[in-house]
Length: 494
Image (cartoon, rainbow, N blue to C red):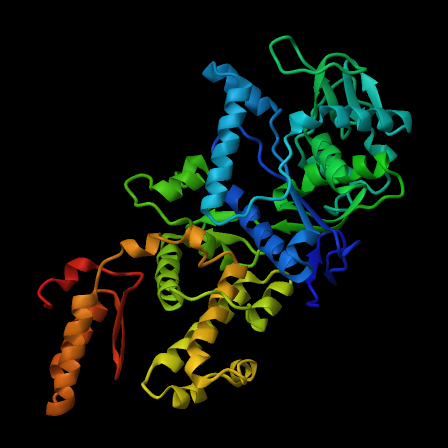
C-alpha cells in the first residue's frame, strides 16, 4: 500500500499518515457560510482537499473514506443579508448553497460524502454545550453561554500562540459578562426578528465554532483522521474547535492530523475589493469586466500548479499556459479509456500532496508520448522513452504501447481531477488550424525533394510569431494555439 506523508500543523512535522481505522478513513473540512457567491480564494481549499479525497480513495478504496464538509447556514452575515434584501433567510441560504455546489463542481470538485447544514444539528450543539457547562468548561451569563478558555491548558497549541498574544492580535469582543476577554460564545440570545431555537438558556442561536465540533462528532465520532481548511481558520476557529471538542469528550483526541492551505493572491497582490482584484468563482467561469470566461478545468490546473502550503498567485498568463497544456493533453488522450495512474504521479501526491510535482510528472509522461509518436517506426521510438516507463510496459506489445501509455496519462490526470469527461468540451471551441497544418506539411514534402526549405522556414516563423506551437514529423504537422496566440497574425499565410 502507498505510504502517504502529510505536514501536520499540530506537530509542525511531515508525518506518515496512519489512519485510526484503514477501513473507515475520516476527513472533515470547514465549508462556507452561505450568504453570497464564493470568491476564488474560497475555491482553493475545496480543490486541495478534493485531491486529497481522491488520493485517499485510490489508496484505501472509495468505500473506506468518509469526507464531510459543512454549510454554515446560521450566521450574522446571513441575517444582515436577509435584512438588507428583504428576502427570507431560508431563500438566501438555499440559493447560495446551490451556487456554491454548482461552482465547485465546475472546477472539478467531487461532492463530499456528507454535507451537513448547521441548522440540522442545533440539538447536538445544545447537548454538547450542556456537557461543557456540567464539567466546568463553560458558563452561562446574561442569556449567553461562553467557553472558559483558561479551563483548557492546551489552548493556543495549534496556532503556537500564547493567550496574551492572541488577545493582542485578535478582535476580541469586550463584554461585561465575560470572565476572560478570550472566552468565546457557544450560545447567544436571539431577538424576535432573528433566527432562534429554544434552549436551557432561553431562545437563541449557536456561536460559529460549536457547529463544526457538533457535526464532526455526530458524523465522524470523537476522534477522526484529518481536519482541513485554510490557514486563516487556524485561529480562532480551529483553535476553538479543539478546545471545546477535547473538553466535551475528555480523553479523545479530536482530529489526529491538521492540514492548512496557504492563501491566494491575484496578479501578485492580496485579493481585495479596494484593489479591484476581487473575483468570485462565477466571475472567472462566466467572464467579467470585458474578459472572457475561464474553463473550470483551467482554474483547477492553475490552482494545483502551486503546492498547497505555499501562497498561490492567480494570473491571466498562468491561465493561458494552463489552457494550452490541457488542450494538448486532451487531444492526445481523446478516445482512450483510463488505465492505472503512473507511480511517479502517485508518489508526488503521497508526498504531502505535492500537486505541482504531480503535474511535472504529467509533463514528462506527455513528452514520452511525443517521443513514441514522433516517427513511423514505433519500436525504434520506444528507445527514446525513459527506462522506468519501459519497465512498466515490458509485457505490452509495441503495437499497443502507445495506447497503454495514453491510458496511464489519462488515469494520472484523473487522479488530480483533470481530463475528466465532466470538465471537457471547452477545448473544442478553439480555432481550427487544420488548413495551416496541411499547408505547412505540403511545403515540407515539396522541400524534401527540392532541398529548398526557405518557404517552410518562412511559414513556420510566421506561425510561431502568431503564437502557434509547431510540431513537425515525417507523418504530419501538429499546430496548437499557444498562450500568446494572435489569430490576426495568421492573415495572408494561406
